[in-house]
Image 1 (cartoon, rainbow, N blue to C red):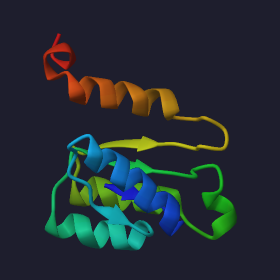
Image 2: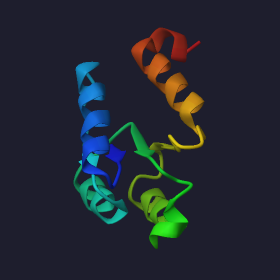
Image 3: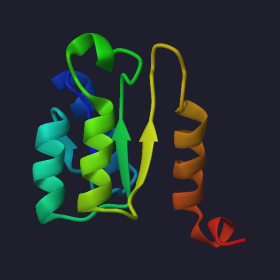
Length: 105
């Protein structure tokens, strides 16, 4: 799942992940993401712009709290393209997902 408010960025991320054979569920915001997650499962929730969320009147802690109740075992990555926070963890997830034999080692 890709949670991103900017439609162009959301589609860019989703399209690139799909090109690498990932199944992607895009969501425009946390409310939509939680609604979609009630009906689906996923391996990863990618939340972009974590550094800007407090300024966008968005409560990330509440989203993560509800996410834990809907899917307590889903991995989540909080990233910021602006600051680079979480980008290395996302890259590591992509590499491990592409090579499952290495992820198990």
